[in-house]
Amino acid sequence: MRIRAVAVVIEQGHLLVIRRRRDGREYSVLPGGGIEPGETPQDACRRELALAQLVPSAAREAVRLAG
Image (cartoon, rainbow, N blue to C red; front, top):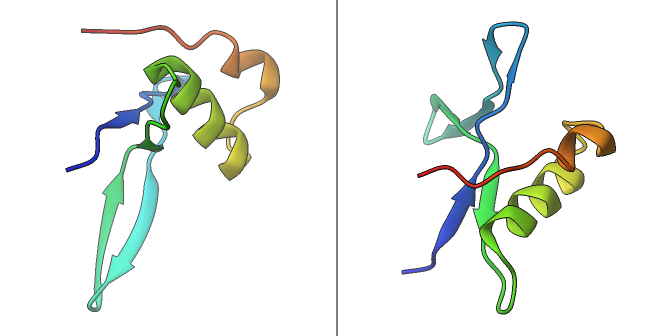
């Protein structure tokens, strides 16, 4: 099992989710991905948000660890 990091992004009261489809069914997930060796969970979230081009770079710097 691979450890993942996900980002909870709320903008003007709306939660950012990614819509996916598998086997004809649509579902939503939080943006994120696997944590690479030597990477922090925060860095993984920043990388994934940058790859998906979902959040401006200035906002990615505001990523904080929760939990």
